[in-house]
Image 1: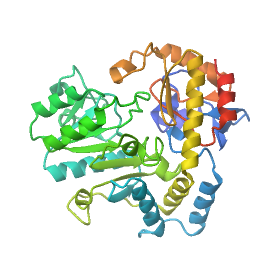
Image 2: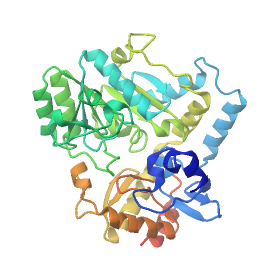
Image 3: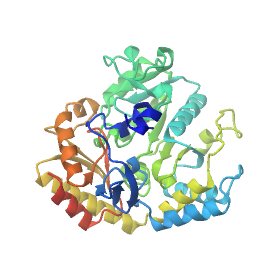
Image 4: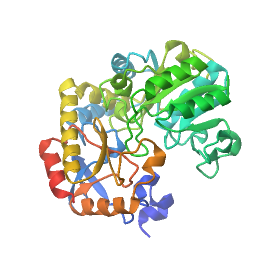
Length: 405
């Protein structure tokens, strides 16, 4: 038993780190710089994990490191609103203009949970619709899978989650508007919100088919439900204004995380002013956090967003497209949106989680370990996205394609 295994459940502090899906033991990483990480033996890897999304600039970007150091030297956390919170909020709202008010929290889970609470308060309804394979953190009401597909058979995905809680969460099929319409029709006047990853990234990368997101907008508006985009992964990654800019669809509420913290723990939720003004102390929806808006986190997030210029986004797209094309030449089935990418071991690109689950996970595990042996570190699951950073330039991409099988 390793020391970590004796201290942490399964030896990790987040499940996917345990390599259960691919087998073997993860390398003990001790350093990162740009597109690379090093293990304790000094071996270097090209990194496509990227801390599972936040490191859009790569590891230890000088601007981010400098901003964190300056904030720490200034005293850290004070328990009052800081200038850094205001500056980061202004940056976010300028790039996502449909966010009129925002609240910083400490994780994507907390942000999604809070946005759903706001939706229930605003609509005075209790039921929420999510999508099979969509992940919105580990709050009880979101740990749900569709049993037989019937809403009344929704079951918990985790021990310790009660049936009473998940009974208020219905599960639709991603990229299937009819499944959403059927649930709304079966529960008239009861659905508070539909929450969706606009680009699914927790079943592997699955892009929305044309008309899906705009159709959700129409269905929710017609039924009186709110539309919540979970852009924890896609926010400031697939476009300067996230997926809502890329696809031109306006959600009522948006959930953010990862990139806006520059690699430090963060979450945020925001949206229409009338909805966000329901949040305490402006309104009756209670939500609080001792370390929310922490100056170090705000500094890292601000530094990251200021580095994300049009030229950086153009280079991200160019290099991610080069990686996709090179993998396709090798015969791979590749899904990509911006700098998010998944290599699926299927005969066609998935449209939903049911399709994604037909992937040959044993073949993926073999591929994963071949890549690892060649010095390329991939997310250790068929159902995780690869994250291309601004540090993955043409030379790094070419080295990746040369190294992997």
